[in-house]
Image (cartoon, rainbow, N blue to C red; front, side, top):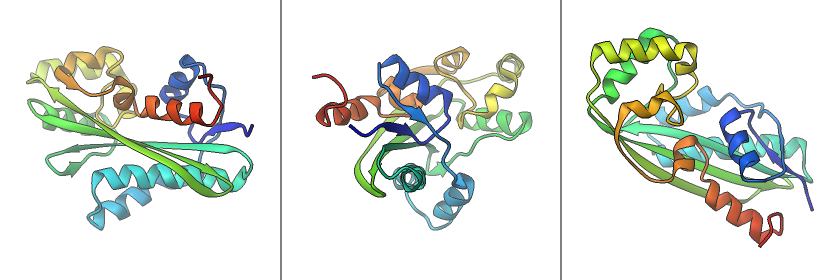
Length: 198
């Protein structure tokens, strides 16, 4: 069986696969995600298609370097009222993003793409809807104090598996999709490929 490579060094995605008992290697994808995303946003591409395109670009790049492996690329987009968010670069940006999310509903769209021999052979996209409660300025300041720079690695400035759960009043959708990978669909594909026990 070909080895499975996750085209990402994301600790969260790696942890999901490890916890699910999936054997894999991880390799960073040599792609400029920010440039690709900015170009697609400028062209008016939908959030769903941007997530898919970024996952595809990562998987393709790593597949070209490992043609005999099965390569999994994944990405996630946050969209609120048609606005696509990017990660905060500093505390001021993080505070601004949390203020925009406050009292509103947004979607997290997670995409996964499998490549083999330099060709896409499977893809899946899933979304989750999250309702952020009204956040006071004091809460936002305390929250950012507690998270520190960890707030900058998540596009929504939250880690829902930790302190970030305090931001929400309602969440609809797969927990795995919220974390950045449509894991159930990925496992189903691997099962059908004989890489996970039936």
